[in-house]
Length: 299
Image 1 (tube, rainbow, N blue to C red):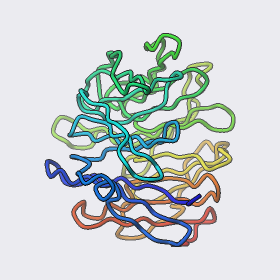
Image 2: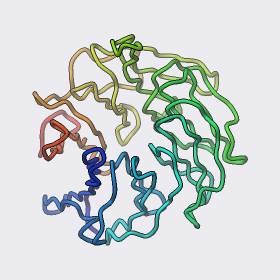
Image 3: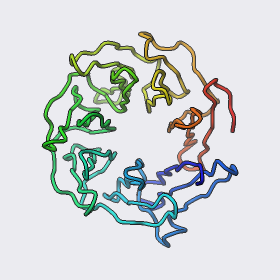
């Protein structure tokens, strides 16, 4: 079994050049654009996100209004979910279902993963972002609403919400069952900055925000737990690491590489190493850094 990870490359807007790369960790090799090579077709326009569900890779191709399902071993296309608005992220939901958020205020789509069809739409105004599925519920972040929405798996409807404040984009659960949410910057109508990004910890049982901290000069792009879920990492240009028992943000970066402003973040569930994507100028080829859990660059 090959050890490695996938990287989604957004490509330029309206250029139909989204690509999927595979990094083979066994021999430190990179296979660029494995999807088009395996399928003799382009992936589409803007690869927004990718998620593994049931051993298959679901690639959300935003401006092509579809999700492409890819075999993780052969890179062959196994199907597609179409008829979407502006798909953003996908998450596993109730057994046999998945949920797809919408970047521009369209409904959350409920997908039957056997037929790859949208079987229901859940109205949720605003820009719905990353999701977290735990214990029969899926938590949905919404960057233009003050609420964290909760989808009940038994009904595939929004059954509850928690007021967490505006700007939520990325969410994880720690070893104690608490929710950690990363918030982007908020902007005024003239695009000046209204509020800096934040990191918040939410107790879902009491629907209360327990930790509320503002980052310095930026927003939180991604937030990911370490493999033991007792620490987490987040991106605010550089990489930061924080313990789940902390109530204030770290004052210095865990890892930085000027002039890189990191864009993507993943944690290896086996080694605990962190992978950081640098999109550079969004035109040139990007890079991925591998950083050990002690903060040293390994690749």
